[in-house]
Length: 256
Image 1: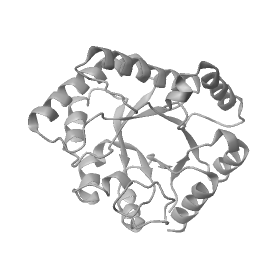
Image 2: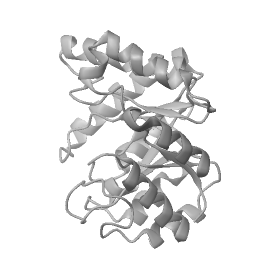
Image 3: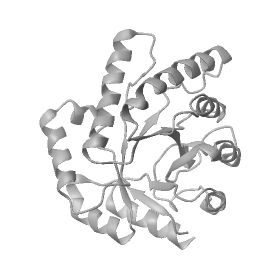
């Protein structure tokens, strides 16, 4: 399977990752800047930004994984909400500094809490927030990622409410979908019109292990069939850490 790949660089093994990105014409998705020990340490934060800026590579298809630990963009608590939104803006700012294409964000939905009142409140609050933040960063794509939501319906609802925002779409995490009560094919068919970015890795169908693709129990031949029916230009991240796992994952998918 040939596709537009992305990989997660390891700043402590950067030369090999740059070579790997060139070998597979892969973009980077930076996972450095969602860690509190990085964004709370200004010196370390700047060191990483400057390192990535110095690399001899094209960053126009790169992405940033936005903050998500303890992030609640539409929290009812004003202190939590304000801090979350400050950090969200910092994710956008680092994407701009690195001339990245977009930022991936989690929804903030509480997994398993599926009451209509809760989902409706989330839809209203998140739609309002995206209408505030997306125009301010219209040069940056915003990819909303499924994590452990049980069904795709909240995403469909959000995409319908934000269809006027050209830079808001879905990051479809196939491995996450494989851990839900809803069949992955249903996830894909429901979200297909809105998918502009994807994440893949492997697991035992029980836990989110982030194994290299091919090292777990997910049948990626099914995924290949789904992707073949999708629009071109959707970039797929091998969301695994470390050089060996990343290479193994790339090799496995290109053999399909």
